[in-house]
Length: 253
Image 1: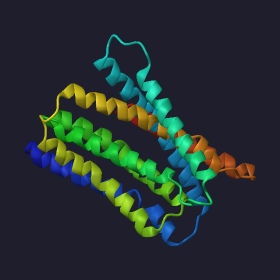
Image 2: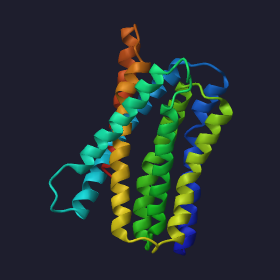
Image 3: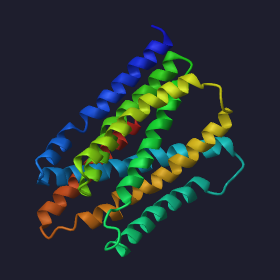
Image 4: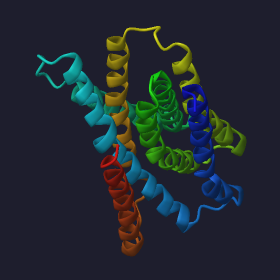
């Protein structure tokens, strides 16, 4: 099997996984009901984002910075992570202050943009691979969290009651970004120096970790303040389940 054909199959499978993962929440959206199952799905998504931040994005960013700047002791990726967290908090506060003039929140669009860029960069990383073995490892890592990220993005967007056409458009773009990144990476394999590519990847992963941390903590609490103790504990259980899921995935990726 040629490497090009192998990457093409990987791109197709990743796209299909992204699409399949959003079918259930989209079907619930079509019924115009915000059921308990979707509340639990949002809690699960928050756990996934929290796990992605601590077990995937931030550790990867720290490793990349240590590799590029081995003699620097200052916690640069952690600082970038805090910056991402504060930016999301600022946007949330801004959207509340100007709610009467600007009723549409900016948070879901910022989150979608971050996930879309992340999907593009991870696809490019796979596309740049020069051997089937290295490509296979990246493929496993992407598949391990692609479905959970698609699900988490979908239920987070639904929380803001976006129009169906807008929601589907964002999800479609997100689903296509990793396959597109694979094609771009395979086409421009030697365009940029490796060190520059690793620095950009490290900065983005650290920043994304901060935004995911905000989405899964303060942002989650704001939308899930229940008076019923049993419902709140059940949602906490699903959040923990999402966190554990990403922790288990980290064992193999």
